[in-house]
Image (cartoon, rainbow, N blue to C red; front, side):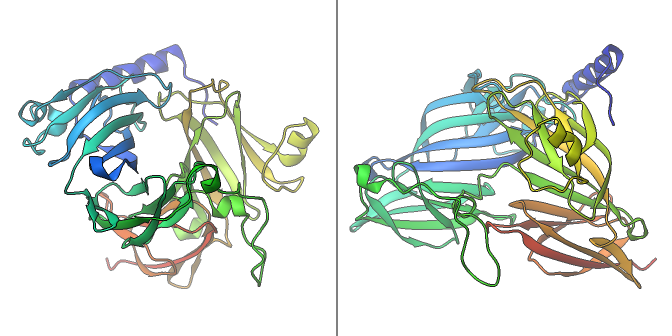
Length: 422
């Protein structure tokens, strides 16, 4: 279990952050999500909410390009942790690319230069929300009695909200369709590939407006479909692309039957001061730790049994047995309008989920997150995956599989691998 930072340790971390700040790397980001809200068709305009995490260690600014052909207006920027406005300015590309963060980037576009609330901590991030309105007649226009949103989207997670009174009649990218509280229709999707999604969306008048358009709130009723009871209606009708939880598994050598993992999670419920992670049956946990990605602050962590917590009248949301292991992470109560992004790290040992059989590595585990990743141990190449995945090779040679799941139910992941030739 990690201990809270001492003053000396904190000073060393701060010194390291300032050192990283003096020699910034190229700009990097993570967890990007964009919501496009189409305005009245005659305006050719749409509001954008862009959520992004700046991840370059030590960076104090973040640059967001203004897309060629789009006229930007009504810009504002918020710090996602505090909800407070951030200072920003629009700078020409020729000036922006002089910053080492943007060295080699496009100098023919303007950029929104955001002053971050705090330097990006090592292995952490600066979460921001950029709000703006674009006018772009080539991307959003009328075609007969229809409206068309035709725009390649390079951000991995996106949603497009139609104007009130319009129904979706065509969408070329597989999308989850949901109605918002006001009845407006939204198409949402995830794109795990490294190329922009060539989205073409068409809509026509015909949808209900006003109070008649509001959807019935989803219930806790579960799917009736055989052979087993499925997820609740609430789970099934939650936007998967905007889900803020993700997890990465790092497989150790298969003879250990163990894998390290971290899962990231955003807490925004006012007054919440702890997170309980119930360890899956059959898995044994060790080396739990946690910290705040926004600041780098280490959090106190302890292991408890479900029986202990129940006796202490601590509410546990997940189903448990009295002997279930629970990792308890404590943090200051979340204030209204604020949020914390947590990273929880653990090592699991589970000979059923992860094992070596003859000359093969076998990872067989159901994964419930929308965004999951599995990193093979050093020296192994993958030979089978039951679920489609994007594959990449890390700088140290290990193979990473990203398994993004747009469905509400867990995916039954079966991965096999063999040793590389020496």
